Image 1 (cartoon, one colour):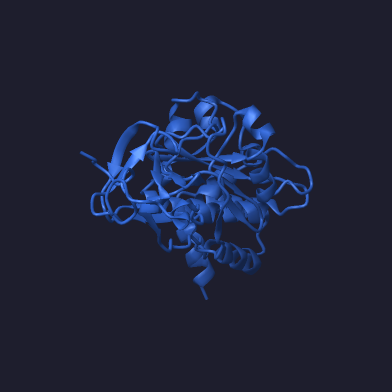
Image 2 (tube, one colour; image 1 turned 60 degrees about the horizontal axis):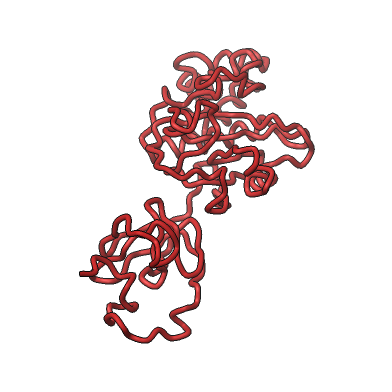
Length: 301
């Protein structure tokens, strides 16, 4: 008995039917697909019926396809035939400050894309440490999807600069970013976010964009602010370096993560109204109720 649709023809036409040329063509890539056959579809360990079955998806299941090969799509559980999936319009992910997240995934099969299931219990903040001009989010994405990135066995989920957010892995996959081993909590249970420090970029803006991403991820996955941690938390590395070496900067970053899109405006208003120095503003934002305090000062007559 066939428990899924990958040994029958599209639409459940039955075994032994002829497959036309249109059926053999690879379908265009789309992040989200819906399972169409009434019998569901088999999940395989590789892109073909010669690979072992590892499960099945029921009719109507919406799956995220992260890579395609020979008419098959890779999901978080394995490979399914694209003949039994119908592309659906995926919701565009946009942060509350208006940045569209650009998905540019590391190719499936690369050694720096380990797969596995990440329950998204934490968000880990890094800095790229690359001050070269042009070392922005897109450049780091290209590096991760290169032979050099694969050889280095490094990967993370997002890179953020002063104008863009690029996603390299689905949130639900593990990555090699925390330095605590393949099964360490940092690698296996957290979403890795790198902030660019390129010399031709605006680090303060990149930090604000990273905070907007953190706010989105916290909302999507139910991650509390107490589980937004530094890379240092997992293996002792002095990262994120700039933030760690600036007094009050980590507390200020967490305040941004909690403060929403109005946090920047409140800071600017208060600073201009009272003529306060940057160090004083960082101190106010680091205060436990800093975001509320700035909001009240900004609104005061």
